[in-house]
Length: 157
Image (cartoon, rainbow, N blue to C red; front, side, top):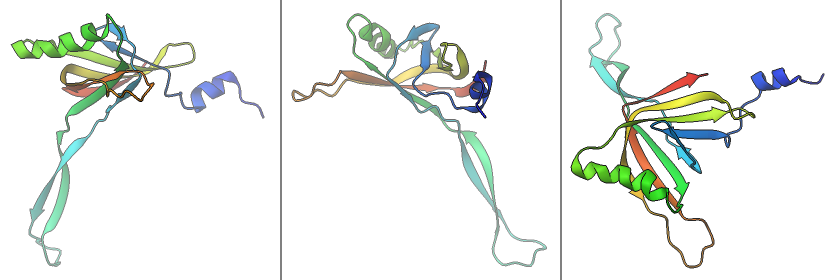
């Protein structure tokens, strides 16, 4: 039995290469995005057993504070856009006036329409890495920026 186009849309996973990144409402091309993780630290609470009759403390593990939202963006160095996109943003931290921006990573369908979006709320840059320079290499120059945000929210469109 052949699958219809609608069956394929709903049953097959989306390809990972078809995504779009928007920083502060502006779409910027990136070669890689990583770190879109939502997690919580845990805390351990121990108390003495009361009625169970077993030896040793009773151990309970519970969720605690949310973990930091740290995202890494990588892109090729391009004249006219790389300094504007990354360096000017991280350089603003030196004067303690960093602009926090919402960052969207949108996974798209075959038409380029966003299907699922990861929103990093109030993100700001914490690290900028220059490309690795190697005289024997023929690779493109790739820079990376690490962002920290308040939280990551997943939205389905």
